Image 1 (cartoon, rainbow, N blue to C red):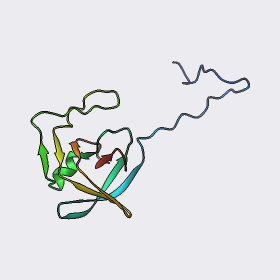
Image 2 (image 1 turned 120 degrees about the vertical axis):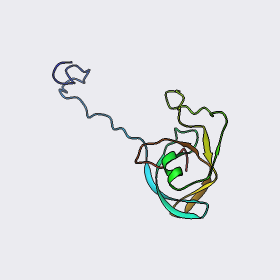
Image 3 (image 1 turned 180 degrees about the vertical axis):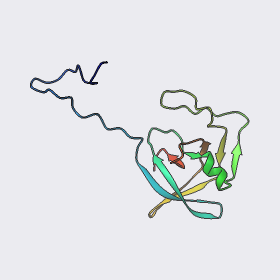
Image 4 (image 1 turned 30 degrees about the vertical axis):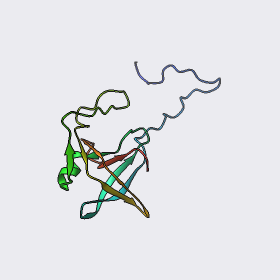
Length: 126
């Protein structure tokens, strides 16, 4: 396109401007405290995403805090939203980790994978 990105658009009569762009974001993020086998209250940035089928923990966070985990002989297939296999996830999962926010807590095992630097954990529900 030359010039403005809005050279052509189907608009209601009398409107000469495009509407504002749709807002997008990854989903709600929050800080939680996680506890792992004797290590308590480790701050973690958590993305709550109902589109995920399983909780996932950051490989970097797992290594940094020496979290015990189980390795599989074969990868359990994890797919992204486009149904592509996520290559670096599904080989390992953690022993139970407690996640806490305020008065609510739950104990979960997590699949381990690489994540963006800003996140430590992804939860599909909470």
